[in-house]
Amino acid sequence: MNRQITRRRFLRWTGAAAAAMLLGRHATTAQAAPKAGEPAAAKAGRPNIVYILADDMGYGDVRCLNKDGKIATPNMDRLAAGGMIFTDAHSGSSVCSPTRYGILTGRYSWRTSLASGVLYGYSRHLIDPGRMTVASLLKAGGYHTAGLGKWHLGMDLPTTDGKDAAGDGSNVDFTAAIANGPPAAGFDYYYGISASLDMPPYVYVHNDRFVAVPTTTRTYIRKGLATKDFEAIDVLPTLTAKAVQYIDERAKAAAAGDDKPFFLYMPLSAPHTPIAPTKDFQGKSGLNDYGDFVMQVDHTVGQVMDALNRRGLADNTLVIVTSDNGCSPAANFKQLAEKGHNPSCVFRGHKADIFEGGHRIPFIARWPGHVKPGSACGLTICLTDLLATCAAIVGAKLPDNAGEDSVNILPALTGAPAGPLREAVVHHSVNGSFSIRQGKWKLELCPGSGGWSEPKPNSKEERGLPDVQLYDLTADISERRNLQAEQPEVTARLTALLQSYVDNGRSTPGTPQKNDRDVTIAPPKPKAARNPKG
Ligand SMILES: [Ca+2]
Image (cartoon, rainbow, N blue to C red; front, side, top):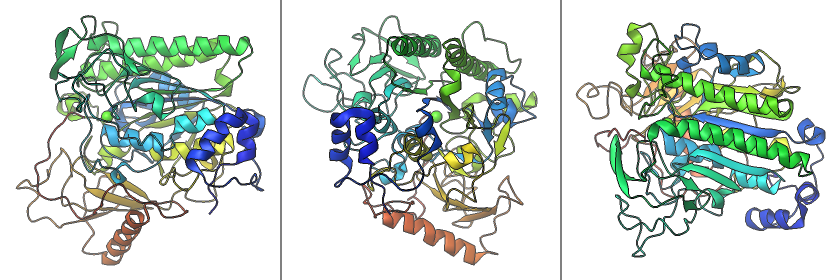
């Protein structure tokens, strides 16, 4: 299958230099433009793309997705009224770093060296600098690209002794340039934090530099180096203000003749721990501080939409709001249940799990003139699909060594897909357990949650359970009746399909690729699941 960049289109949009760079890196030969019709979007003018990624916000936390939800989310509801909700959207993993890798590269993270768990604030880069990302694709396609938020994909920090950064940051040279961070992944502009809001260093990063040298410490779950003026409570408002400022700047640039569309990737730091809503939101949900923090995330969505509307950009912008995994138990499910609210809606489990609560996530898309207002889509999609979707929007063909697990969801966004978009989707839990879903069938290659809910990996509750779980999600959305013994053919078929995705280094059509490590789909070796608050 031809997945190579369409040279002619790139030359036309970006000039020879950018196209040559992209082609040199990702493709060996140039191809003529595809004969099939160009995407409508490419013909009509490329849209701006704004991608807002909440951190640990559950499917059930968004009112328009959960009629029984008790958190007011008027801005996300308004976005849905003007666009489309997806009821079967999934993150590739049930924790932060691997999902983010998948979003930006279109490749499942379990193909990398990260076999389980997450990265930390001083971790080295996970995205190979030679790998195409959504940002590098769009940049080569003529976009201005910005990232505002929590990176959590590692970056190579400069050190005073030439060794890797120590876990406590003691050898980091906070005055020197950072390598293989957001700029290397294709972002023209980046402002944010290196990992989760509870992972040091508590120092903002601007492009490839820390903004200041930390001279003190802070403890947000974890203790670590911090600048004197860094406060966790300020991070979401800061990112929101930066986003509004960025949209204003792009509008001014357009007025001055720079008509580049923009890609704004906003991986928010919230409602992840430390759960720290600002004073304006404290007590507002009537539930608990987590409910308040979700309301503040919703407010951020509203601020971004207001800025787009104020600048007349909303009509030509594809806005996506989603979450990197399910809600964390840090939200206090028991307390929320007492008020009638379930962040996981009808789904079993939560963040970190192989169950639906770990990876079925909110997904709302708005794009006037392309996405039907007030519509809903029940097709299975995955956050790894962004790369292929953006390629389709700009009329580019992906090379074989990019977006190995990315499927174009534009047919779903714009109306009438002929059938399922994906052959299947693969999920991964915090301890490295696999699951594969095809249609109504979901096979989980572990006896328990593979994460933080019961039955936990290697717990006494898990002992004696079958090695695998097979659920019929049409009849049993809450994954309670394991059918693996009754449906051995389905179990065997899905196991073989997953193995073929591993062996081929990809789950989409194209030339087989290599994984970065030997991947085994068998249940992980006994090791207690840690709670890294990732
Ligand atoms: Ca997360």
